[in-house]
Every structure is written in C-alpha cells, then in structure tokens.
Amino acid sequence: MTAKPEDFSGGEIETGRLLFARPWTFRIGVPSLTLVPPMQGIEIAMAGRSNVGKSSLINALVGQKALARTSNTPGRTQELNYFRPEGEGTDIALVDMPGYGYAAAPKDKVDAWTELVFGYLRGRQNLKRVYLLIDSRHGPKDNDLEVMGLLDKAAVSYQVVMTKADKVGPKGLEAAISATHEAIARRAAAYPRIVVTSSEKNEGIDILRAEIVRLVAGN
Ligand code: GDP
Image 1 (cartoon, rainbow, N blue to C red):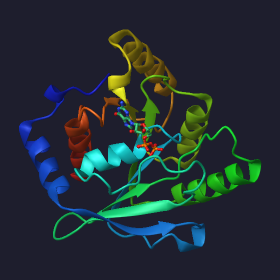
Image 2: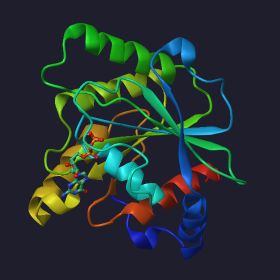
Image 3: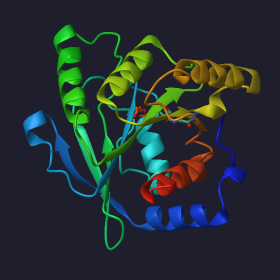
C-alpha cells in the first residue's frame, strides 16, 4: 500500500498547508539524554541513514530552504535537533534524529547513537510517530532493518518515507517499494502505508504533510 494523492481529501492537504505555512525555527540541539526537553505538546521525528535526504526533506516539508542543514559532515551531528513552528496553533515539535550508517563510524560512536536514540524513544509518550526515511535507489539496508527493530522494541509507531524518488526509474522504484513493504509487513509498530517523495522535484511532500496533519488530528 502506497499513499496516493487521492487518499486524502483536499481539506486535509489544505490544513497541512496551514500548519506548514507557519515559519519553523530551530529550538535546541540535544547531544545527551540528560538534556532532552520535558514532554510537551506533540513530537514527531525523522530518522534515516546519513545522506538519505533527511535535511532536504525537512526543508521541503516546511518550505524553507535552510532550516535543516543539508550535506552535513559525516558523523558530526550526533544530536536530536528540535524544530518548532512559530506562532499560534498546534504545539508540535519535529525532532531531527542523528543520521546513522556511516561506513567509518567507530563502535563507540554507534553505541553513543544507540544510547541517545533508544533512550529518547523509550517512554516518550508524546512522540506520535517516527518517519523512517529510506533511499528509493537502495530500498531498506541492514542498518535500516536494525533501526526498525529498535523502533519495534521501543513500541514507537513509525512510517516509511522513500526519498530521492526522482533518482530512480519506475522499475527500480517499484522494486524498492516492494522490498520495503516486505520489510515492514510483519513488524508490530510499522504503519503500513509508505510515502514516496522527492524533495528535489517537490513530489509527495503534500502527501507527507497530509499524513502528519492526519496524525496530529488523531485520525
Ligand atoms: P541528510 O544527510 O540525510 O540530511 O541528506 P541531505 O538532505 O543533506 O541530502 C544528501 C544529498 O542528497 C544532497 O546532495 C542532496 O542535494 C541530495 N538530495 C536530497 N534529496 C534529494 C532528492 O529528492 N532528489 C535528489 N536528486 N537529490 C536529493
């Protein structure tokens, strides 16, 4: 099952535009568990391998070119970065989780990542969903599957978002989507609908906004 524009009423997409029309700002970078802010409002989070296109997707989602930094130096940003919309409206934070899967990451870096991320995920009751980004060219890799396992273990609802769909032809895209469906099929906490996006071509971004709005509205 893959989300298509017709799955959403115009109303939901319009509300999403309103939520995402508010300017978003960076609030805080959290390098360690002791500094995670108190639970307040709703949180959603974005996770994915380094270079999956996470910063680009966040920027596309909020319609701001430079909210999240793109092409970070590998391994540099081991922080949970909090973004919030300004002004009146839903109290929501988008948490940009540190990328994973650097080939050269030493074991202590990986352990620090796991401690921070799993510590954050566990018992974070206001965390409504993690959007797990997977590159359309590759489909799920071993470390994506490991992170799915972590999310299942923490019992946090997650939904897969395919990125960089413009970089692959229709056959390759279909193969990556079906491999992803297979990977999530029997996973307890995985949401069955996959969203396919291209930040470059601004495709699927409205659908992702609508998914978030639907989630925030509690549907
Ligand atoms: P991050 O490390 O996950 O935050 O990834 P970035 O957002 O920095 O993107 C990594 C690289 O992929 C950059 O060179 C981006 O320009 C490129 N990129 C990101 N999203 C897309 C996309 O949708 N299409 C294409 N063609 N390139 C993309």
